[in-house]
Length: 80
Image 1 (cartoon, rainbow, N blue to C red):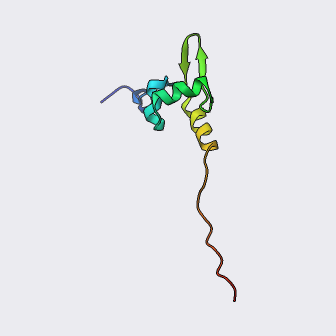
Image 2: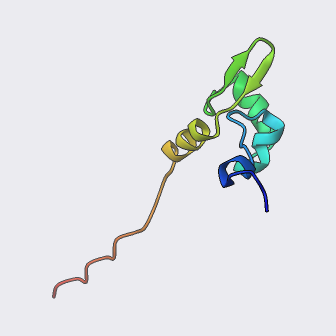
Image 3: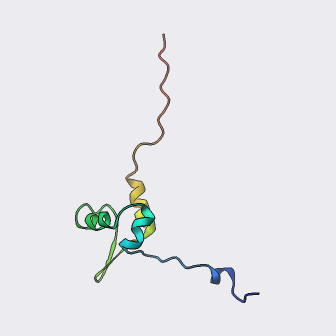
């Protein structure tokens, strides 16, 4: 039997990810993320000295803010 609690044995998730780690998590390429930083800046990032880091929660919120479409309402039948 282990002396560690379940909280101690759980894997720790990083608070921030670099572009190589983030790209597969959100289905975008590293190239897209790098171009976005230089131009559109749609995906939020943090610059710490020379490193670029992304908070997955903030990135998810930014992507959800871009959401378009959704379910269509049924058309009403023409009254005759």
